[in-house]
Length: 256
Image 1 (spheres, rainbow, N blue to C red):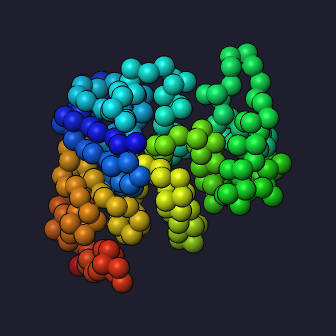
Image 2: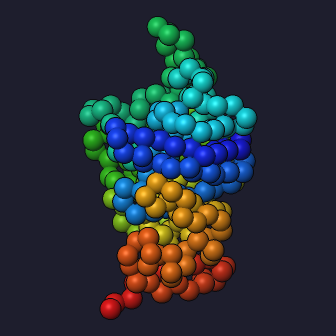
């Protein structure tokens, strides 16, 4: 499903958080939203989901998600927030099963199909062995995979992930990003993530959107967006940008 945003403004209180944002995410592609703290990255994800009211156009496969009821929207878009609430004592399987909520009738219970979907997702994410483990006994990397499992159990074509690698060490960051990419390619998912690590964003996403003070500062392929000048201007950082083996940019800090 293609995501199309045109001239989106979002105001929270008396502060304009997003100002005239325009973005197109082609079906089956991965766009990473980058930018300094407070740039509006998470707000943009929530606006796509319909959780942040704003002025302007937002469509997913031609439909404005803001006009849909929550259950309808949850069948179209899956969203994994940066710091989801993980109920202490709840087991991994039951948490994953929450992703089936849009398909379970009100006052009803999950059926065999719902349980089968949850089990399949856990197997794909190599979590079957943890199905009975309480959430509060998981490592950071395991928690991130479980949050992703719940989102995948919704069986949507659009996946929105807010900082999926936050608080992970470099090995687990790579594992999560590889997993997202494999799932995207296998299931033809349209993926939008926010991410702080610029090199990770440049290595995995098809396109980047650089937000700065709520405005689009740059957009396009990673090599065009992640330039030395852009990082200096918007992140106040000195970096060296070098092409990797596949031409994607790799950033390293330069000391003054």
